[in-house]
Image (cartoon, rainbow, N blue to C red; front, side, top):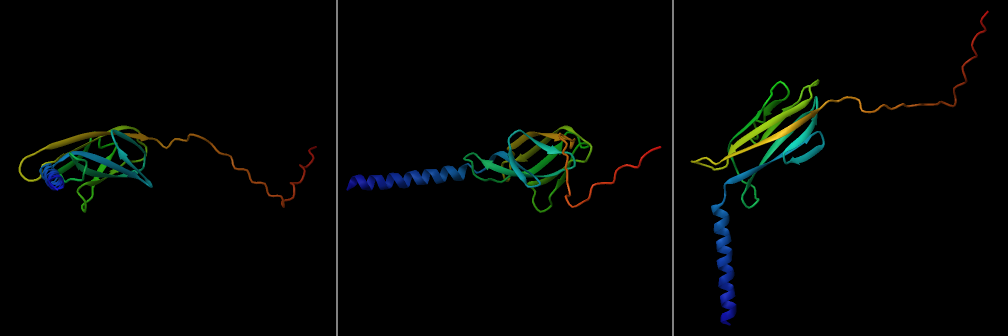
Length: 162
């Protein structure tokens, strides 16, 4: 009987400790970046590819130290070369940006982001950089389409030459 009572109180103690630990570790310690180009969505670790003339939607996901969702303040995105790519802020979502790549550019673009992972007073700076490889829309193959209409009569023979 005492054995079951002891197990019951031990389980309650473990749950209370886990809840207290979860509540005390609420600040963001990392950020993941999701990039959407057209119908392709990818979670980016360090680098990603985009075609010239494309626009990508960039979405941040702040993560706490146990892998759950968190919140951040003072989010800032920047690119190392604004002539190659421009960033647009989404006024409805401070964690979402648009990366616009004009036609006729290629090369690499470094995307830098920073945020404050400590809500309220104090700062826990989170900074990450991603490399965007801009690919040109050069032709990589050719295709020949042949259509033969069987109902068309053959062309007339060439006229004799004198």
